[in-house]
Every structure is written in C-alpha cells, then in structure tokens.
Figure 1 (cartoon, rainbow, N blue to C red):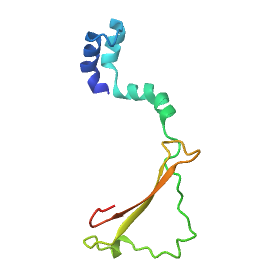
Figure 2: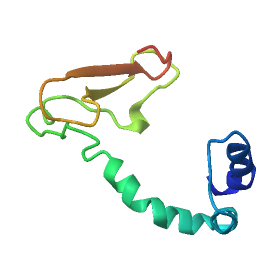
Figure 3: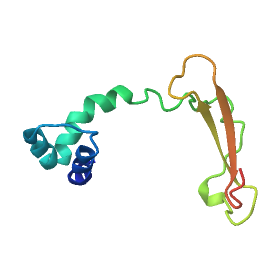
Figure 4: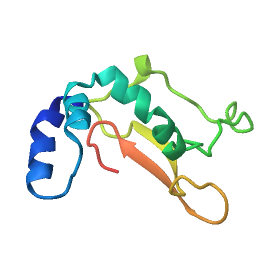
Length: 111
C-alpha cells in the first residue's frame, strides 16, 4: 500500500473521497512500509482467521493404509493421487458446515 499512496491520495482528494489537512497529507506521503505494518497490526489481528484447519491427522487407519513415498511415485502415469479434506466453514468452525474430500491425480491433474 505504501508505494501507491503518493498516487492514490491526490486522486482521492480530487474526487472528494478524502479530506485531510496538509500536515497529515505530508505524513501520509512519507510514511514507511514498516510504520504502515505497525499501525495496521491490530486491525489485521482482529480479522485474522483463528483456525486454518479443522482436520487433524489420525493414527487409527494410518497403519492399515499403504502409503507410498515420493520415491515410489510414477508421476507420468495416472493413478497416483493426493487427497485432502477441506472444511468450508468461512473462518467460523462452530455450527454446521460442509466438508469436501478432494482427490487430485498427479499426472492428469484431474480432481
């Protein structure tokens, strides 16, 4: 955002979307990216998603399912897949929501 302020501020003022004192404008046009990050840190923290994943790796089936390592894969041949469980909770894991089991073939990229 910092590098664009000298271009955006005059445009917003000209369009009547921004009304600030000359002293504030000078500070705004010379603010450093580090200061912008420092000032916005509390706002970013408030909107940060709490849990990025609701799924946890389990050990119940881990020993029963054969798992191939990357050295055993033949990525040029269909049939080798990557699987992931995706939760569609929109950042709020409480209540009901949909989960998708996503499987993608490494060779064909077919999902």
